[in-house]
Length: 491
RNA sequence: GGCGGCAUAGCCAAGUGGUAAGGCGACGGUCUGCAAAACCGUUAUUCACCGGUUCAAAUCCGGUUGCCGCCUCCA
Image 1: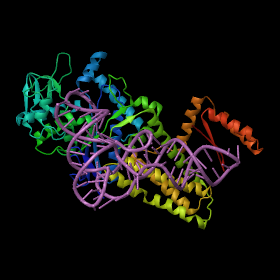
Image 2: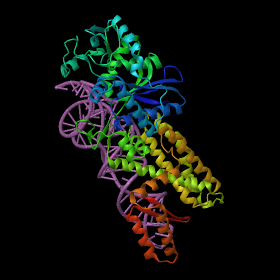
Image 3: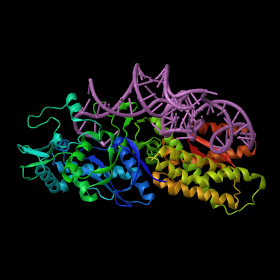
Image 4: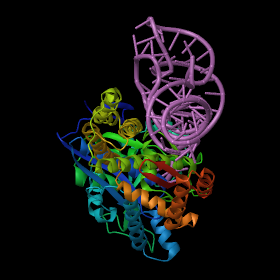
């Protein structure tokens, strides 16, 4: 089965065939480090992290590059506002970025280059573009001439005439065509600058990605991606620069993730509804956020709300409860004999468990359909819960083997989705601890009440037993009586 | 104004030509002292609307309506 990916460039799903056999070069546009990362950055990071994991699972040798834009107008502006050097701002937010990505549990890319470390490469590339007639210097600035590049617009599906008709572009006297974009910008007094053949200045936004991707991945990348909004102008301009300079295709597959809306509104500074990763991780488990995102196709827009995160969190809790129960069941050393009449039900579960991985991979092979893949995880969970209920604390060898096979899927295939990474017991303990803190009860108090209730139950004093249960319930603690004792959890 | 996307049950959400995954919720059953949890079953004859192509359409084509994105910094 071949992996198929949707390519923004062609607007179609295509078979994924890397340029160099087994090796895959993948570049994702990172962040401009001038502020804290928000939920939109989180989605993009999670999407490409999942791709990165799945490609490796599929046996590819992946080099994943994700850059930092650490010099830019917004960084300079922020530095001026705070009266510090631009590097201070960049370093601060790079540090915060690492804290956030770590909090989300993301894999580290192979290379994380910074724009400011590749200035000379940019100067070289700009010089090449001038030599080849694709760019022109003007009063210390250098512009790329979009008219010279015949394919301009091929990624975003537009052409120069249409764009000029739209004409919402600011007129800059220096530009030959209003759509020409800056490769190099002369610096104003007091601004950071680098020496260049065109005078003191700094790079334009797009040039860094062309240079850094080429440096680490060669002239043609297998995968290039980022958020939808980068399609135009950023990625369009990257194609123009890179292909004009090398004469070769820049990237074979363009992958773009959809946006995150907040309560049906676009996230924006003016609406004041920017939700940072820190704010989310303060309140939610990182895997709940991940489960929420991966329940949607990566290209679709997604609407964030407390309710939807709560739904994801509920789902995550249930997965961990099942995993914990499997662990407990496998600890039991008794090995009961198979009862004959039960075999049919086991057969269904067995089928689900044994076919899981093939279905899971088939879903991800189809343009990374994580929502479908998760659907199979729910099926797997149902099958395993069925077995658990069925064995009733007396697992046969057959059941033990199926449970352990299922558990293996959760840890191995779960890794691809970045889910189920925590020790189930630890996950549940933490839930309890945090819940108790909010309720204002100690674990000891809860256990005492459970003891009291069980004493009442023994005496068939159902009234008292129910009173205790209801009083705990009103505080948000749910009791479950099982053959092996009374369990409790936070609602 | 130009370009593009989306519309699937009460809600969330897969599905791009072969007869509607999955989750949440709700209801019924099994289990239980009663619950809870878990399991089993029910919950869209139909995919915004109208027309067309086809043996066959949620899927393709044309039109209508509604929502959204990009065209300026944006994940």
